[in-house]
Image 1 (cartoon, rainbow, N blue to C red):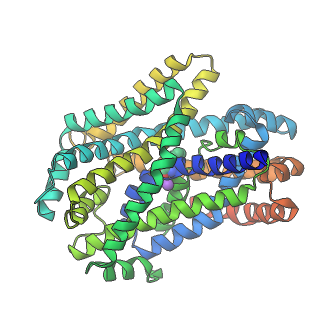
Image 2: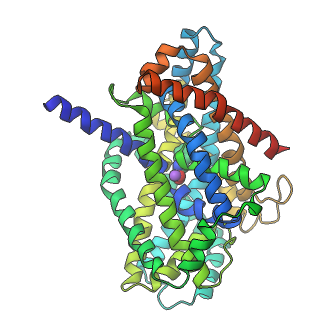
Image 3: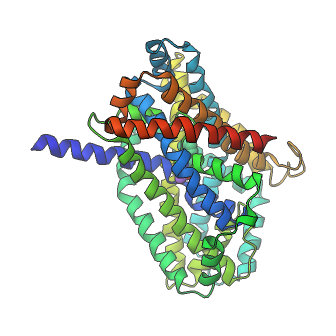
Length: 446
Ligand code: PHE
Ligand code: NA
């Protein structure tokens, strides 16, 4: 009896841990502004399709590699490649993932720093009584202030890396599991309130009325990248979770639960944010500042809004904290594998991420006129290329490895969905996911 209970609780623990990595800035910050910049319903539809056809099957591939290897990503890949009689060069896939999470972490820390700033400002009541225009102007003033941005970026990185260095992420995860339902509840209240406002009709029409004419190659590429980003798939970061997965747990069921949570958090945030956009006559394509401009306006209209806003940013910060620990952990673990002590490795990662993050900080002020690949600032570059290109490429290689290289029996066991579940998964990955990533990447980069 106690044994069943124990297993049940660890199944749940696995789902919650992966949800902690998945739910973060991707859902609440990135999803709304990408939807806004990519034509609303067209982006939403493609994003959901990519989650189902690519995100879920590749997420299973990534986790089952870790589960079958029962080692850290690079070692698991080497071990499994040997076992399958394939080249041990597959381990470089782990290193590619490390490079991807490194770049993502560099801007993740900067944007999470914006949440710290907004937490402090809302506790101080700085948004009380401001007009929507003034709220927008204060965000722009903040971006133009490299000192305040640097302070928050540094603080967030220290918060993340102190947990990584101490190796106490499991403690934080417990806190996260307890507080994430609160974030969910708060978003539910906010979206529920948004439904009663006069912007909701237009927001819902814009989000949910099919609009195929808005679909373009870049919208498709962005939606695919976002599906990988939001599920934390494609960088081997989730592989490590597979290594600790309990023995009897169906991977497809676990992964489906994570995806449902992840997508609904994004939808709730989208409904709340776009109701404000349409009631205020704002531009949905406002860009990365969208959430920071709309939410203070939305909360200002609720009774006790300043406090709700503070609580919201506190919970968001917690969600981004667990995601960023997840981004940092594989980098530190890889350096540790190369012989560095944990403290050293963490310090080194901290300095390097901080320095690259500073390029993002400065791209709103001193480096605003420095352009990369055409028109992009460094921040534009680092928020698009790793997500839209590196994650899908990593995901593609992960999918090929799991569906074509690994021996059938190993995969059947690690997937834990029975022979039929295995066949469905394998056919989907081989004949849908893999060709789809290739087609979208090739046409997108053309
Ligand atoms: N999924 C996280 C989010 O939505 C970001 C992330 C990407 C975390 C890749 C880990 C690895 O915020
Ligand atoms: Na996410």
